[in-house]
Image 1 (cartoon, rainbow, N blue to C red):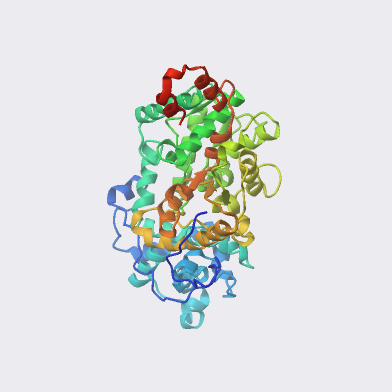
Image 2: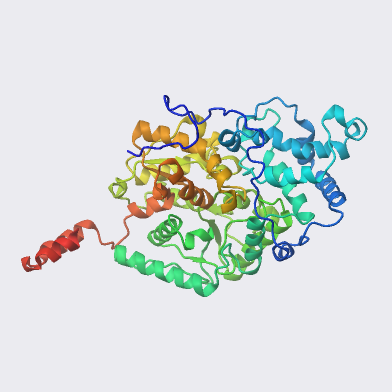
Length: 527
């Protein structure tokens, strides 16, 4: 059993409570800031290269534009009554104790400026309604604390008025971008997608070589030729998946799982080198223009390859962007087969095959894993799967139960619609923010500790590329191995039985057929 040692101050006489409210530490995270985007990164996505001279007027004008375009944003800025329901719902507040990481306090950094310039009371009696001028100090707070919001929307679940803090954070970031104070991590990545088609800047030759290497690995493992096709015109399915799936564990193990499922189902499928990236960081910075450009790239790839279906791989915000925005940004997708969901998630696809009895699994292949499941924020609170409400919770768990014998859920108030964020979402997955990422992961790590203590859980499956990357980085800080986070389709890959696959029994038969003179060499091979 894994022993999870929390490095944050906790009461060690009792098991740490994931929801424990910390002592307040004012300004604890004030100096936590991402690197500022370079002029080249800004220009590539349509923003000024540096802070403009009249930045204050430009920022106020941009805020007015956003409020004018979005009735929802105006309602969110007008309707908060400071009831406190969201106060302790943010993982960053629970992990850092900084009161400006309370959702209501973070929102108010923007709300007080909105009140000053766009409400009657704020213009004439600002002190009465908490309205403040936009100053350099306020802008600095924006840049720090709006980059300590992962847009996970957990606070929104508990808000009696339904205020969506993610929309407020997105608006603040777009305002900062528009005046030349953007974040390097997100903006550099968006530029790569616009020019190359994926977050990594992975060229077609490198992508092709990667897929060919994976084909060889699968054949060596199973004895079956499983293809990972690239740019095959006329394929039925185009897979769009996070670029992490092409190069790093546990992501790449999930990609192998997709390929095995497609192979066993006899599916005709392909990946596009033009639009190989499922992620859409335009959402993180609140730029619908950049979101649309990325979405249109996916549409063009589907049209050029003449596919009938688009299936998205394991990525939380990519699925939110696809499920909630793809048709609005780049639709209508009337050229696709209307008999299937548009778009479709790989878990929906695999679950459907399981329900129909078209996949065979050897669950014992995952007996080394005592597994739990992390509901990724954007899947849990901003999308659905399947035909029934709550499918985004049930379908991943049904797949995991179909492929492993030992599955246990974490405490009920830390999963499903109440799930904690991994701590690295919303454009925070960059090393200069590692401190806030590590502290923000604390509530999830405490919940993981509980299920580890209660059931001996050793691994946690996740549905999101950012979650997997974040957990692999921060888990060692909490006593877990970095490979304790796994992909759902990694578990599928381990257990699926392919037609013609070399099994352990086949290996034993071959060993028994060999002459005894093989001696120690045979034992070594078997081992």
